[in-house]
Amino acid sequence: MAGTCWRMVEAQHVVSTLRLVDTMAEQQRLEQLLDESKPPLPPECRSLHYLLATPFRYGAPYPNGSRFRRAGFTPGVFYASTSVATAVAEVSFRRLLFYAESPATPWPANAAEYTAFSVPFRTSLGLDLDRPPLNLPAGQWRHPTNYSSCQQLADNARVAGATVLRYDSARASGRNVALLTAKVFGSREPKERQAWRLHLGPPGVRAICSWPEQRLEFDRQAFAADPRIASLNWER
Image 1 (cartoon, helix red, strand yellow):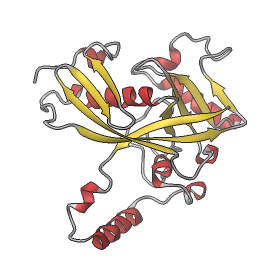
Image 2 (image 1 turned 90 degrees about the vertical axis):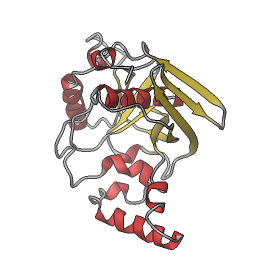
Image 3 (image 1 turned 30 degrees about the horizontal axis):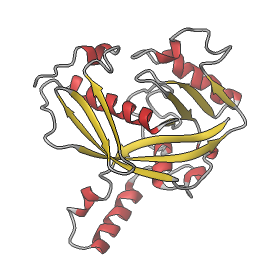
C-alpha cells in the first residue's frame, strides 16, 4: 500500500512566538527552548520535520481517545486524508465540534489560518477497511462518536505488524489514512504546502486557499449526521 496523504494544522507556530520577542534571533532561541521542553521523540522520528514527527511524541498522556488511538500513554497515530479537500472537511468538522461543545463561545471575528501539507507513504502491510473482509461490519469503522471497535482494530493491527489503515471518512466524501508508525513516511519533510483560511459563522464554514485557488463550503447540514453538530447553536 502506498500513496500521498494530506494533513492540516494551524499556522500559528511562528507567529505566536514572534509576538513575544524583539528579534528573529530571540525568536529562534525561544522556539528552541520550547522544543526542548516537549516530550522526547521516538528514535525513528528524530530526523523528521516537526510536522511529521509531532503526532508520535511520547512522554505525555494522550488526553482524549480518537478513532484509532486510546487515551493515555499510547502509541501515536498520524491522521491524514488522501485528498486536500477531505483534510479540509475533517478540520472544519473539528472546529465546529469545539463550538458545539462550548455553546457560550461566540464565533471568531477573523478567519483562522491553516497549513495543508502532503507527504508520501509506503508500507508492505496495510489494511483497507472498506474492502473484504474488513468491510463486513457495515458502518462500524465510521461511527460518528463510538471509537471502541476502531481502537481495538488498531491494537490488533499493531500486533500483526500492520502500519497503515485506510478508511472512508466519517465526516465527508473521501478517504483517510491512519499511519501507525513514522517508519512509513517516504520523505523526511512535507512535499507540498498550501495556505488556507477558515471562516466560521452561522452559515457554516467557508474554506479558501489563495494558491492554488480553491474554495470549499460546508453549510449547517454538512456534518449533521453527527448528533453533536446536529444540536449546535448556530445563532450566537
